Length: 85
Image (cartoon, rainbow, N blue to C red):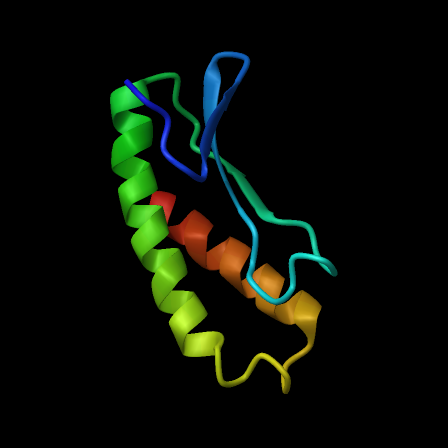
């Protein structure tokens, strides 16, 4: 199976990694373990996470200059983790 963008394998586990556009030079990317060794499950999680991440980016596009950069990054990381729960 081909690994899509934002999904990578380190050791035996799969991870989600995505930069926040406009903040990628300032902040680290959102990096999250998918807590799975199953490639099928990782792809399923990736689909949900990518949709959620895109929705958040769309919501933040107008507030990007007004909110602290660290707050945006932290919120996105926590919100993506909630999707895995």
